Length: 354
Image 1: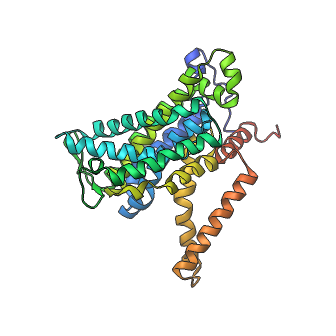
Image 2: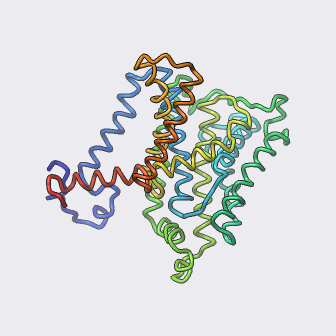
Image 3: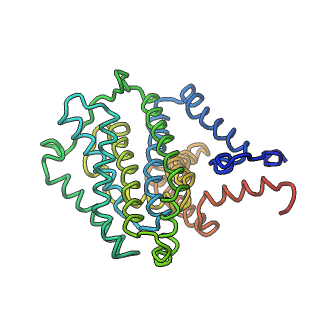
């Protein structure tokens, strides 16, 4: 009975079109933000930041960018890690070649370069679709891997092929503790997540969804496929590029091309499938599933006191993890976001059956 909108009247169009129409949702979001920004920094350890929270936040951002392209616009991409690599290497070169380049400008610059790169490799989407488009975006993965290993200027003539980010600082504030790095990533996730949510609710977001559902019908009613598809590639690549720069600068600190391999692209694709296609919150659910669940499965044998070797525990972890993925796809093909939406809807009418 507590989750109802009875008596919550809307007196303006702006109130009727707000993201969270139910007051309880707004309070819940404020509570979760308070926990994320205030409570977690008080109790989390350095290991928790470095091994769990920072990867989870950055992967949520990357999955959000991919979900805009795949979930909202319906364009398949297997080169997401390539766009992350472009963002990371572009941000690194901006700081290495321009003395005094601010961190935020370098991150934005990495996102812009990744956006241009994504639009270039998104051009085939104007003529091909489905599996053929997936192969075209897969070419971006191999091209970036080749470029990062063969072109010396990408790594600023590094002899080992790996690069190291400069110390993080914003307006004289040195970001050197795991808590500060976590808060930086969390702020960027909140800002870009809010921007993405408003984009998908706007006219361009409706064009993306129209192209996803039936591109021929969308063209008939006046939607320009060129603008809709390339804008989806641009926005998606920008967010993924920023996530890649954060992955290199904040999480890794130093990296090589193998840090953005094809496995990362497939992992991000599985994240949005498990979390829910066409859902901002589904991107976060998918990242939580892939980042937090393996850690939990790895600790269960120790909690139960089972004498398992490291190799056996790893194999069991992979088997259970794969089985859970198949289970979720069978139980709810629309992802964890659909389960969450169903639970919210049942709460709105509880205790009545419908």
